[in-house]
Image (cartoon, rainbow, N blue to C red; front, side):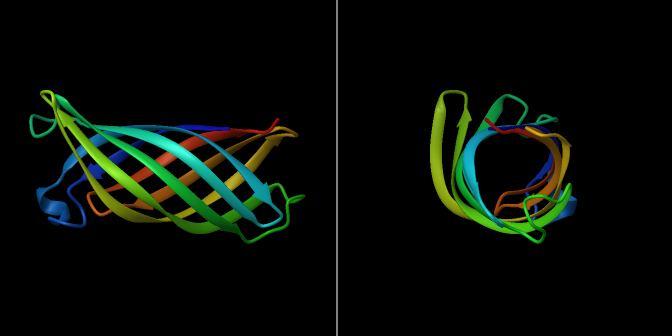
Length: 138
């Protein structure tokens, strides 16, 4: 089970970083790990921090896969991956969905036997984000 909070830049790379807006993002997910691979289903919510998108949300359900460069018993594990998404914009009662994909790079660090903290960067078609999160294992 994962949960995270982060910052995002809405607009980049589609319309360029100079025309985007800052945003905050949260994401929650469930998944499984198989040696050096992780598969996860998660749902994120992103909202802009200025007048451009301040009264709306992007809801982003995703299926992700990551390759971890170190064995499961290592305490620090860098990874790369990607996934497929549906980006749903909800603003003033209007919603629409767009299928996209994203790339991911990050590092996962154990803090106890059943928990870790990770730092992750994602690049979607409509936004880029940097997140800090935690994973809990059951």
